[in-house]
Length: 403
Image 1 (tube, rainbow, N blue to C red):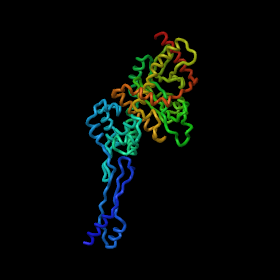
Image 2: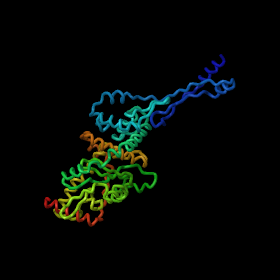
Image 3: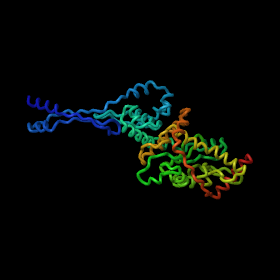
Image 4: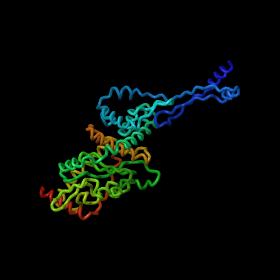
């Protein structure tokens, strides 16, 4: 009887607490403990009675996601908000599931893979705050931040090497040939992604337009899909220097990136080449435009090259219009920004390969957001490999003669 009364007293002294979110998946669990006086009395009597532990979590509404998005939305609504139709979304979730699946615990129910991916895609596609996205999905803002990084890292771990890849070189060469440039394996360029001022070496990230940025260098195929990316260099660094410090440059220089597939132009042998703007060095495997005062044959060469090189500029435009987080300074740390940029490149390729619609109006919205962060002008460089000069001259002559 005494024990029973003491147990009741101990339970009456239990204190309820409520705290902030800290778990990477869901709101934090909270427990109740017995007051010290009750515990001391039980110990004196030589018996410790089991005290029930209970858990609380902040109650939030998930009806919008569970009952509206999953059950009511059609493909146009999925496309507008997640940048892909419902079937592609669930295919993506299946691919990422090995890295994202979590188990329920006694303390909280884990977010589903689908909801985790949806939160990340929404945040990447919309310039909304973490608080706004969290309110939309019925989670805390820290949960949104965690979901973005978990999904980005899962994409890089499981999909980057499979989706951002060279693929069939002959198909790419044939594609560029149909556009007017022979034996071409890709177009290369760099673009600046706005970032917050880094804590260390901040001045290195200020580009020629005066804002902090990180460089994304990309090689694309004839359809504007990324075949090679390199991200992380500070915005102050010239595109040519970024390029020279990549594995892509080393492999092109060694001649083992593309198959050894040469053609004869005039009396010159030409390997598979890539196309760049005047910021890149003229190499036997990299063609760039003529600069300065041009004659008609040089203008024709530049026109052909520019027409094919436009695919990389269009790819950057579509990348940023889909994933608008790349257009404005996010509050991601300097170390997390490259993961998100790379993940967006993978998602771009996935959408392009699946034939996902690029909606009218996205580009205009992107241009409006990008107005405050214009792309810096890159200085042209004059260095040229002598063999490359001969190849470019032969190509120029063949274009003007129609051979």
